[in-house]
Image 1: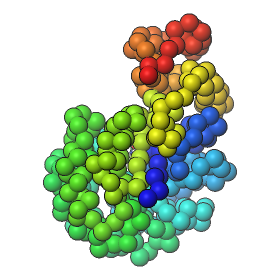
Image 2: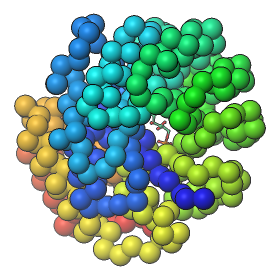
Image 3: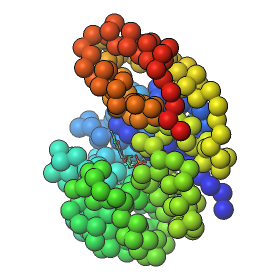
Image 4: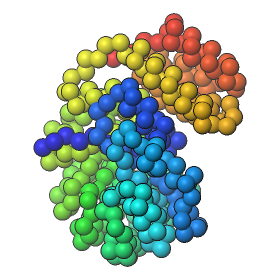
Length: 318
Ligand SMILES: Cc1cc2nc3c(=O)[nH]c(=O)nc-3n(C[C@H](O)[C@H](O)[C@H](O)COP(=O)(O)O)c2cc1C
């Protein structure tokens, strides 16, 4: 078996700027699923709508574009457009837990409706030139919802199914339901990818020992906190040195790249605050720097705080 690692889609984080910068400083990911592209009202998506997946922005790693949508009439033209851009595989988002999305029966909001999912697949799979993968949770309200869905998925030639074993209602609370994940593996004819709460080598090794038929693994938050993680997993040992220096040069470039694309300092600062929610967790006493950054309203002040942190306080946790 060949171990494969995917970077998870995190909207607001793992866009092409992050992916490219990551790959200049770290390694270990074989591919990424992109943050979701919502379908648009017009028949052809504009280049700005597709900026994150344009091939010229994605030379550094293979990507699979993800679509958030609940009806074939909107999904099919976008999938075709993505095929023409060079993407033989697209991913369907059946996992997004956010109430605004789920209420409209999109993402995890579609999981309680097996008939709608079947109807979607019946119409979509034969009509698109791409192979389809699915990223799903166990259900919206109840982790049993997936039990109805696995036999439906089995009837279609899906390339793989990525499962985050929580319900939508759970958001990110509680533990992933590993028993339910095991049931899915037993029920499926498809290749299954595990996703959820891989935060270090040990958590990966425990999961891979327990699910020894799973070849492919997806990591999101754990890799944003610790970008060395995919390489650590691939090497099977956690022995990087100079972590703060490597991380600092990655961070610096990430900041400069976002500075180039964001129009105002407000947007840039918001984006950076988002990242530091995760970055801070890699450092000893990380809550201190997170709080300082989150209180900051001015970009200049933010820059001083981060500079001082790297010069004086930054110490990698493990
Ligand atoms: C801020 C944020 C944004 C996310 N955006 C997406 C998304 O666009 N598409 C998607 O399928 N999942 C999205 N997810 C879910 C992640 O891809 C992943 O399934 C989840 O974080 C669990 O994996 P992890 O524990 O390795 O992070 C998002 C998660 C977070 C926290």
